[in-house]
Amino acid sequence: MARALSEAVLGEIARLRGLYPEPRSALLPALHAAQEEAGYLTEAAMEDVGRTLGVPLTEVVSVATFYEMFHLERPGRHHIRICTNLSCYLNGCDRVLEHLCGRLGVRPGETTPDGRVTVEAVQCLAACEEAPVLLIDAERHPRVSPAALDDLLARLA
Amino acid sequence: MPRPLLTRHLGRPGRERIDAYLETGGYQAASTALRDLTPEKIVEIVEASGLRGRGGAGFPAGRKWKLTPKREGEARYLVVNADESEPGTFKDRTLIEQDPHQLLEGMLIAAYANQVHQAFVYLRGEFFAGYDRLRGALADAYARGYFGRNILGTGFDLEVVIHRGAGAYICGEETALLESLEGKRGFPRLKPPYYPAVKGLYGQPTVLNNVETLAHIPHIIALGVDGYRAYGPPVLYSVSGHVLDPGVKELPIGTPLREIIFEHAGGLRPGRTLKALFPGGSSSAILTAEHLDTPADFEPLAKLGSMLGSSAIIVMDDTTCMPAVIRRTVEFYRDESCGKCTPCREGTIWLSQILDRILLGRGRMEDLDLLDGIARNMTGTCFCPLGESVPPSLRASLRHFHEEYEHHIKTGACDVRPVAAAGA
Image (cartoon, rainbow over all chains, first blue to last red; front, side):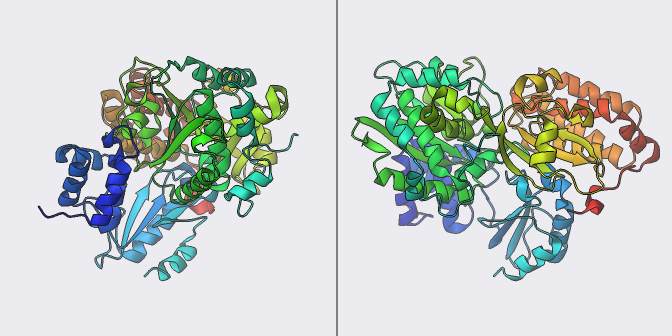
């Protein structure tokens, strides 16, 4: 049967499985590993994960859809997560979000038509001393103003 | 005021490297604990220190360890709650990113005290930088023999797995966290059993501690109970919102709110006055300027109907629209509700709909009683603390700022300068 995941990722999932007293505990880390490969989780990839860990596909999907960081559709090449919770709200995140969406022509939760950027309004990122704060992919950017955001966008590939 | 203890080395470049940590006496407390102290003695010391859980509930740390049954041949686990996501709270993330070995040393002592040989750090999925730092630090600590087999030649074994979450506030609730760690949806468990200490991960005794709680442990062992308590005892306040110098402030527990905000967090922007604050994250009832002389400690805040919680102080000045802040808070709990119980799932939706219409100028006077009634009916009826977190701030805002809600309803407009115009 054709595999969706590469041998490297399947090997990594097998390694993860060995770290836990019960294999199913490796489900979240395995989904992270699978998602890293393709950028999102296809049904075939989730099937591979389930087969490796002994978890039925329906349960893999049930878990994958519970957590916000797992994507079942292809996101943009870059992922901008902007916090819209209290401390960021008090420090003007709504203006930054509006500016961001205006510049990219998307609404929160959407991806630009060219597949470059996904914008997501997210919950408190536990970096309130840097409000308003956002994540571009894995990197956190503190005290972002609309002007600073323009610079950050210009640097995105 | 005593020097900072937990935050003394924060912000120093290269602090995550094990040599930098060892240079300042790092891992000496763990070495003393494993070589010279019995597990029972450590539990006793931690209990005498008065340390209370820093995740929000404030359960005495030593008593939690004492509650954990230590039967021979039975698997026990240590799980670190590093899923920090209570709005306004950022002390744990700071500790993980800027002094990861302090946490690891606390874990090692906690594991030895509870005779645990397998530990998990449930790390918030969005903590990308924290994951890299902690993973690197753990690898170094393994290489130097502080983890793994026969630690420091004492015969004690401990394996540590860093487990990334994937975005779900509910997983900060300890039983939901355990479900998630078992590879399931993060639904909170039915109680009883009340304590994961007795029946936790895979149904086994599980010591579940918050990051900051564990970061205190090496200092308690190094300084002894009296030496440690001479520092306050210390606590980490996360201060943010409308203050000039937001950040993690390590201060003696019980420091008055006024001192924390105006002396340690830079006070407010020029010309502004304090309107309201959350003393313990968005789950705590908001307070006003008249409460500023209250010590930021468990009992004094509970007496006001609020709580210390995760000691996240969110400050709001007079440019803040309170109904808008409460709407943002309610929307958060609405979006993060797991949907398992009706009061939380439906209550948060109804509340946000009513707040929407008030803020859109379509509110009715009877909406204010309706908001309060829904909040009252959610109190004590939700399955877990998530739903219970909604009523306190909402009801306090209705008490303290009733005329502001009325103004929105009567005029369809806000009578404060909007937040956005105030600038950052």
